[in-house]
Length: 363
Ligand code: GLU
Image (cartoon, rainbow, N blue to C red):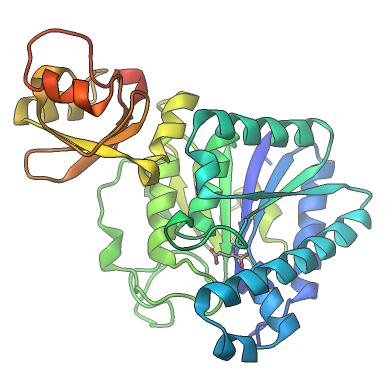
C-alpha cells in the first residue's frame, strides 16, 4: 500500500442510516474498525461524519417533521442526534483504545483567516496527540444562508485546510455513472483528471439522496475543485466491506470514481481563497485582455487597468468575485483595498495590483 500520512474520510448520512432513518450501528462499527486499522498503521485520519439530523429524527420520531417548521426540526434533531452520534463514535473507538474528539463548525468559521487557522490548529493538536477529529457542521446554529451546501462541501474544505493527501467521500453508490446508476446501460466512470473539462452534469441525475443534503452533482464539483488543489478525491460506496483499505491499496478491485490530483502545488492561502467564494462581499468586472491574461495560467495579478466596474461594498482584505466581460464568474481573490478606493482606480494604468497573484484563485 502506498504510504499515506494524512487522509480525510467523509461518511454520508446514507451510509450511516438504515432505510427507516435509524442509525446503522453495525455499519458504523465496521467503518470505525477500518479507520482504527489505518490509525494503527500510522495514518492520520480526519473523519467528517454526517448523520446528526438523521439520528435525531430516529430518536425523537418523524412526527416532529409534521409539527415543526423545517428550521426548528433540523435544530431539534441535530441537537439530540449529534450527541448520540458522537457518543457512538466515542464508544466504538474506545474499544480500539483510540480517543476521538468532536469538531463542530460552520461556514462562517472559514470566512476569516484567523478562525480558519484556529480550527486548523485545533485539529493539528488532536492529530499530534493521536486523537481522531470527527467533524460535522454545527447544524443547531447554522441555518439557511449560513449553511454549507452539504457535508461534501465541508469535507472538501477540511481536506484542503488540513493538507490531506486524499479525500474519500463515502456514499451509498459506487461513484459517478454515465447515466442513472440503476440503468444497465450506465457505466461507472473510474477516473477523471483534475484538468478535464468534461461537463459531468450531463450524466448526473439531480435527485438528492434519501437522508443527506448533498447529491452527486455537488460531490463532483467539490471533488474537481479539491483535485485541482493537488489532493486526490475518491467517491466510493461506504457499504462495501473493507472499502477504505481496499481503496488505499489501489488494486483496482473496488469500484469507485477517482479524481486525479493536479500536480501543481497550491499554497495554503490560495486553498483558503479557493473555498471562500461563499463569503465574497462584492465583485470586479474585468475586460477581455485582463481575462485572457489571468486565464493564460501564467502567474498574473489583476491590475486596476483591467477592471471595468466594481460591484458591492467591501473592505480591504475581503474576498471578491471576478467576472469576465460576458459576466461569467472566473475566480475569486482577496482584494487589496476597499470598494471606495477600488472605484477610483477603475481602468487606471500602473499602481499596485487590486488582487495579487498569491491571493487569486481561478476556477
Ligand atoms: N450535517 C448534517 C447532519 O449531520 C448532514 C449534512 C449533509 O447531509 O450533507 O445530519
